[in-house]
Image (tube, rainbow over all chains, first blue to last red; front, side):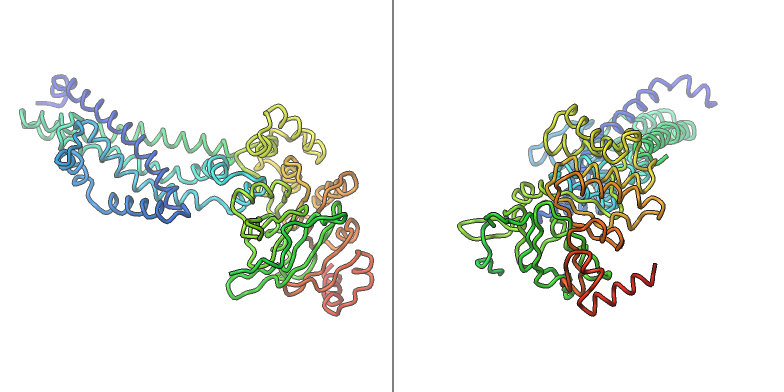
Length: 221
Length: 271
């Protein structure tokens, strides 16, 4: 079966799978960014308990396999009475995992803002929280956007794992089609191309645009 | 544990100094940068601090701005303790809340300006009044524009710092500090990072403040001529102490201490 016939027949399932992949990506990204921010700030906190909690979180989620984390959330948590549907379990696992990596980027971005900015904000008597939100974070954001671009692509590719708990994403649909047709080259070839297109023509240009927009806001251009 | 029983809970009386350092000590690890500093600055007085690098002069300003914790002694501003607060009849180290209350009296300009790069000149000036003092945007804008006018930067009010020269950035930084209506202004080597041809635009602003406003000012500078012109008093720091102080005419014209003479003649040779 040549590729055009294949696509003509299976495009609705591949499209719906792509839609689920994009949804998983966005939800995991939102969750991951929120966790990154919280954990990154906590890791810089003076409070030993907050700092300890952040370090523990980062170590666990960065130090173990994303697939095992996914299985824990979907298969093990119900044993303790916490049942989550598979769609939610999928993006929660991926988001929590990416949040651990993002926390380090947030921390690094904040530390890269020159000391003088903290001092100037203190000299106009801003509270510690205002100093962070109004002065430091906007500048930290610009510094950490390039590595975030990388992380977002990792995140997109990481969502393929949710197919293993039967979330009907692109990878899940591809495996289903392959199981019934054995057109492995066509189906996994198409999946490969779709993932590449999403990463190369959606995620990367968006991150570039964001970098430029933020740099302009800082007057760096 | 520090014993602060010997320090008054507040300084009262006719001649309460605007700023008072009492037996202030500061060290970084084994290095003591200030030992037993006693310094009173009267309301409206302009005091310049000169001295070789490493003599602790910038540390004096940073402690007063509460950017550095002091190891011993007490600093008072307008009669009230700054670094400490009264608790059950004795002084204990100030908490963040007390610092935020007392810090409102002090403004500071830095060697490297430290303007907020993501804000325009006007926004830099409005940030404190809006976010800290709780002024409305309109009030803060009026106040900020008035001050940008004073420092001659009103025509550049919508520019970001990256579009401004060093001298222009420093003038905006002065306006930003003044927008908080401080009683004490600190200038930390504000001309040291500037090209020679723009130093004048910053020193002229400071001159104007001295002649037209009743601000108490403390300035660390390497510009001896400027310090001589505008100061009421000059303090020469050496090795973490005030080696000699006095009116500029006396300190520059007839220095008593050998260290002062050596320092001033070295500075003169360099020019």
